[in-house]
Image 1 (tube, rainbow, N blue to C red):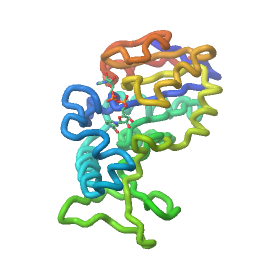
Image 2 (cartoon, rainbow, N blue to C red):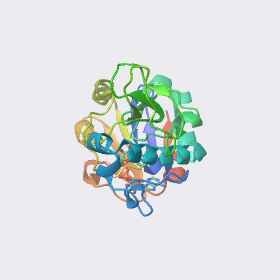
Image 3 (cartoon, rainbow, N blue to C red):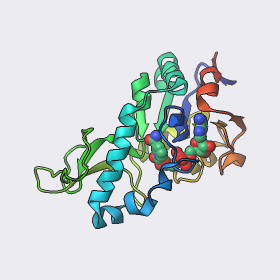
Image 4 (cartoon, protein in one colour):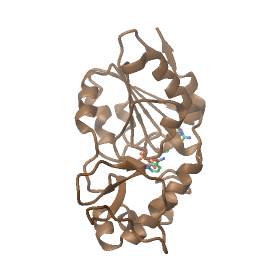
Length: 234
Ligand code: NAD
């Protein structure tokens, strides 16, 4: 149980594990997405330059999976927490699915982008909602400017989104809770080390993450079972 004081700001970091019980495979676990694809072949700027058809094939497969998924009890509990403590909750996700939003969360910071958005590789047009699948024989979509349209995803080697607001929030949170993330993907893996001198730090997931020694306490179990009873509000 984590006590949330009346003034406390809560930073929650979610990873692929929070969506596992909704049927979206994690990257590294058994049945993980990378068993069928090599990371570098589908999720890097080099892959995009070399074989955009394969990249869109991979993200089209992930779009289908994400569109069929529904939030689980952990997503719902985090949306309820937002309805109770409002802007004192900062929900930062490494996930590119929209299950937090489907559950009712209204302020979600997607540091690795959003699967159901597309943007132009060339012009500054805003990323836009798009759930289409682009697999052969469907051609790679093009922007009005002529550039190729790409998934709105932070690929390996690219800089995550919204880092300014994330680091500002890490500076002022009293509680830091990571849920379902392996603790190896940077910069998210280092957030806990950054806040531990000032904030209470917790982890939720079935296995200990690689950075577990940086947490004050780890609640071992599935997010859908633990998160609904995790917070006690003062
Ligand atoms: P990861 O695949 O490296 O690790 C998943 C973690 O979730 C593991 O530590 C595992 O023990 C834990 N886990 C498994 N089942 C769980 C459950 N029921 N409850 C709680 N935890 C559970 O994922 P990561 O650390 O988030 O980082 C890898 C990258 O994967 C991120 O950049 C993210 O963008 C991407 N990713 C996103 C999705 C998604 O959007 N749903 C899916 C796969 C990967």
